[in-house]
Length: 421
Image 1 (cartoon, one colour):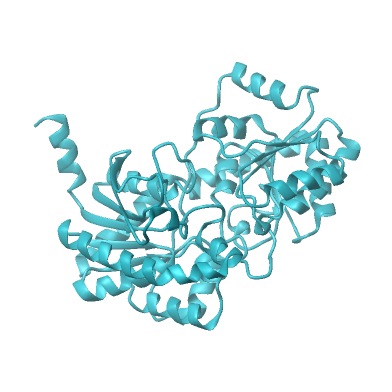
Image 2 (cartoon, one colour):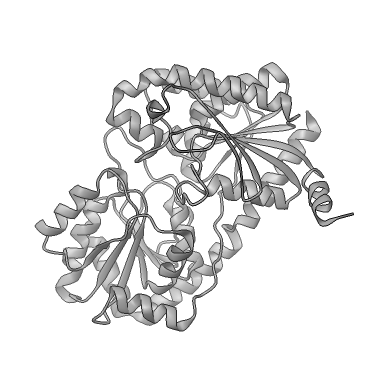
């Protein structure tokens, strides 16, 4: 048997699963929202054939293979310039909050997604449908599952159950959950929110998506990065994420202004982009910390991995905002831990599932930027304690939050659900 035929045989060993999502890389070098693609790749390694159904957007291919995964993108509006609901700065929920008229696009999105999913599962003989986010994917996948008899596993990521709490959205979430065999969640906070909707009417499994442990860069690369970003040899702090109000970067900058009083040579790297970027850049001028803060924008995965290893402390300050949701989990906290970084953040949402206060980092109250600054200063002035916390963070992440562990858990679940169907 040739290598390609062996690969095909392995990929079809356990069955066929369709992942339906509204957040997915738009093109091969798009590093935004890559965790569903990572799961698809890992499921293939577990022996599943995987198809991904995602919404189309301008510039994206209708059909393609991405890292060996079959990707189909459905059209829902014409011209394609109008297809802005699923992607962009902050995702669909943020798009609805910033421009409420986007809700007019929802019916077209829902109908197009449902039709595309029905056609795909029939054509590809899908054994299990796995929807990512209860709205709208959980709803449309549940309807298709009801029409076809294919088992549906709903995956809630947090923002879908913690945000959009009005009556019509809550009712839609209950409808989505009612048509699922099982729902998976990423944290205790997401689990509690799902339970409040289902009241034990279906099984809830906690399977947090994992991250990859990346190799430590060669010493010369680490020296290069630190010389580039901390030329005076000061400490290097790192934040990774979307620049939206929920991430609390405004509080983070206020904390930097406090830290800089005793550590003026420190630098904060902000890796990410979003609608708050201009306001945050202006805030650095108001706080007189423009020298201490570097906005990197979105970075390729390999480059970001190197920066994780070059940094001293991972920092974040998620907070609740009106109309928004708490931080449900946050893969960036896992990525930081796998790189051996202690974390200083707020005790918001499900962050405590990853960061153990006093053991792998410090968690402070939301909006308490003074406490956040004090925790960072403590670690900077106690390097042995910082290294101990970073090592503990790595050990915990390796034991609980790797991609391989998540893929195995999903694979076992899909196999069980398929067997019982």
